[in-house]
Image (cartoon, rainbow, N blue to C red; front, side, top):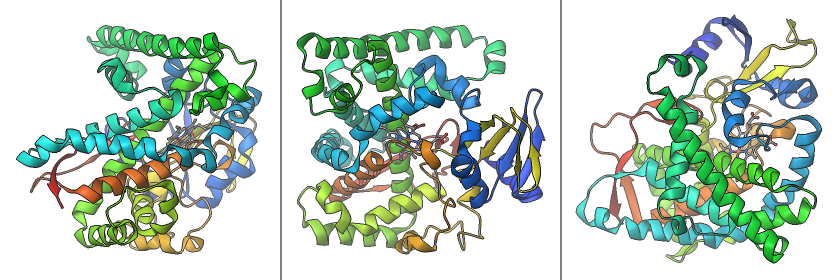
Length: 424
Ligand code: HEM
């Protein structure tokens, strides 16, 4: 599992079918591979499955405390109630200019590389883009106002979370240094967020602001500053890396499939005629939406979901003891030929008839009541950023460069995604 997580979950499903069980030194782990079983754990019997004590919880809690990603039970329900209105489609759409302005600024920064043909580290570029967009949308500030500090601190935290395991920390000589960097980065992020929240409280402007923090403050009247900070950092960490990976894989797949890219570009030119896209245009850009959905099928930014059983259960005839770790892998389920004919093929047309996709066979945003809070935000952001980039350039991978997915917290290209931006 550690050496090759994607190979491991694929082999488990291939060898043992839709319900498999394996034991680690400390755990009994089930892997489920059928949509109805996913639905059972995430939705129909979701109340019996908690995030408490899952590997994700252990990994994220030191950074994010008890925010929406990690909390459970009544605390989670109250937090979700507080945050949900800020993430409704009608609210999310109002951030379209934040997204297109940030993408235009990124393209402006790319000008020297476009002129010289130097490859850009597209995965890093898109991570800075989505971080900037999210910080602006949530906190109403420009991340560049902190120099490189905010982005660096988020990178340091991401690197620590992505590579951290208990065994590693015991073995690795650089663990102490890594921990120190993490602690400093986390202290910096806390300080910035606390300052912004305190400023809102101080001048009483909190609830009047257009941004998501304002929307949350107007819902959660008795929320403490530290709870609000945990929530803000949760949203930033949950929302930027995932969306950046969805975009990175989309640009990669479009480069590998020029015919599909031609269709996307033709749609963009036909619908927009060169003007910047707005949220109101998204419904008229179905081809753009489909390529993003199909990219998240083949390369789901979150590739594994885990829960812990609270009470005994029976899944597909197999007994599940309390405490069992029950997992679903989007990587496996999205490549299952029973639901996806010719599954390895990039074929955005599959999403032209969504009614043909079985319920819970496609889970890029999870499912049930803990479905991704930011799914509408992510789709609006991904479509608008994709469009704004493709209006100006095509991104090309250097000849012979091999891309391999690496499954850390998110699914990312192991050695990055260097691409040349070729003007249209
Ligand atoms: C393409 C981008 C994204 C993907 C693929 C994604 C994926 C997911 C998945 C799979 C889950 C469920 C995890 C589980 O059940 O264990 C989740 C939960 C969550 N996501 Fe996203 N996400 C994305 C973007 C965002 C954005 C933009 C935000 C916020 C700004 C966000 C905030 C959250 C939060 C707060 C949760 C926890 C919800 C809860 O438990 O109530 N995500 N996401």
